[in-house]
Length: 147
Image (cartoon, rainbow, N blue to C red; front, side):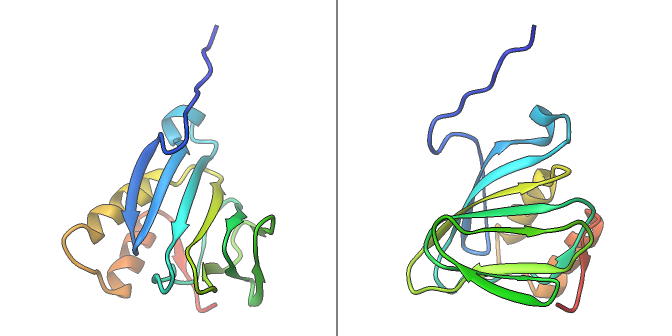
């Protein structure tokens, strides 16, 4: 019989990149690769991910603040309780659109936590160029897009 996994607030695997703290609750190893689940802080003025697409959907749920989502060329800004879905292979990006910190939940399917581990390493000693980030994305099957 399998045991459940229980994590208290701020418990999990923590990564930092682009000025953002990401607390992973569900990892590839705990979900069999089906999905990863994170709570992410977005400070004001943080660097957004380059527009990109990948296999599998990505879900976003805003907890605090105001976040702009650009999915398939359509832009929407939402506050607490707002949900956005980037379907599989559809270009998307997002970022803090307000003047205070924002926080959201993100589900990647399939799991993407290995990418974020490498993203943290890329940001550890210096601020990488957008081109360096795009190369990392490509290594993880994430395709940079125009919008």
